[in-house]
Amino acid sequence: MRLKHIAFALLVATALTGCNDTLDTTSIDLKSVKNKVEQPLPAKILADMQAKNMPRQSPIMIRILKEEGKLEIWKARADNRFEVIKSYDICAWSGKLGPKVKEGDRQAPEGFYSLTPAHLNPNSKYYLAINTGFPNRYDAANGRNGSNLMIHGACSSSGCYSMTDEQVLEIYAFARDAFRGGQTSVQLQAFPFRMDAENMARHRDNQNFAFWKMIKEGYDNFEITKRPPEVNVCEKKYVFNQQLTGNGTFAPASACPPMSTAPALVSALSSYEKTYDVAYTKALDKYDGKVWYEPTEAERKAVVSEKRKGRDIAYAPTGTSLEAGKLMSESDFKDMMEKRMAAAQAKNAPASSVMLASAGPNSRATSAAERMRQDRLPTATTPAIAAAAPTVMSAQGKPVAVPVPAQNPLAYAAVPQQTEEAKKPFWKFW
Image (cartoon, one colour):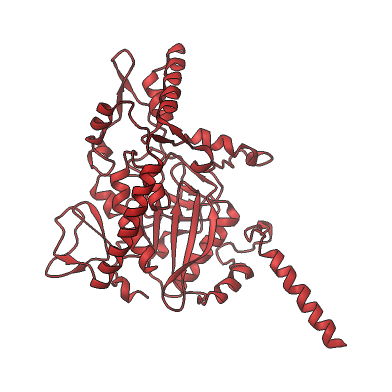
């Protein structure tokens, strides 16, 4: 009889555990945290790691998807392949889709970054912080600049990826445990969106498309191998999983040395690209005559304005581009832009500035000739972009200065930058 009672108790406990699976594991009461730097990961996450055969201190990788507003923690299983262990909703990120180019542009970084223990900032004014490592070798070679770009708490961003304090408490713990397990460098991959055929086709008119195609190569390498790719920079561009075939080294601004891709990876990439090409062609047909309207930061904030009620004024969630953006026909998009120009002229405001702020870089031109002209413009990967100030012409044909956002006001304790160490090829990882 007693055994029956014990079995029933275990059954109830299991059922309750199942219910708790749906709860937000970041709902910890921060007042109960005695030492935020040493706060252990929740028992639920540790149980998930054990179920996925992930040693507690095995390596991690961080992946950010701006448009969806997601920060993913990928962790190595015992077989050295990585799997998502936790996904978080980013509370706030500023600017629009596209890489950071210069100090004060309010853009959050995109690309591949190497994080060391020195990038952890336990004394941040924003609860806890991890420096993204911007600018990296690619950014520096292309004249991009900025400082204090972080993943931090407080849910308020000016060029950073801001989480809630509860979320960053866990993210910090993931990195801390991995470093203590012997990982010397955590790879941060920051993308504008999941780089599948559907999203690439939807954003094909964005001025950053050439840059996105380049970092997509690293995205594809990871999707195939499920291991962080070996990242190098030469000729001012990223190269992934390349083996040196002779004398020479990778130098960001110099010609690429003789290099090659492992045959097995070449075969896997070829198969992957064939499937992608079919899906991309299908997606182009789907989005023919359509324009994706990317929302402004203010429009994103409006969608999640309810979240701010009852909180400190500094708490400023921004929502996702997918929630506030929309797919429009070219004619509807043109009509919307014309109405905004008319409204701006009625208020004696530079209409072209309103167009630039509202439409963003991914709006299509309204004529075939204008589209061809835009196709020839330098992309965001061109170094000149970083130095040149944006200028537009008003409706009267006069130059109009485009207002530049104020410099990033966030102040952090200085985090020493370390030179990226030579890495083992991906097939020898960990």
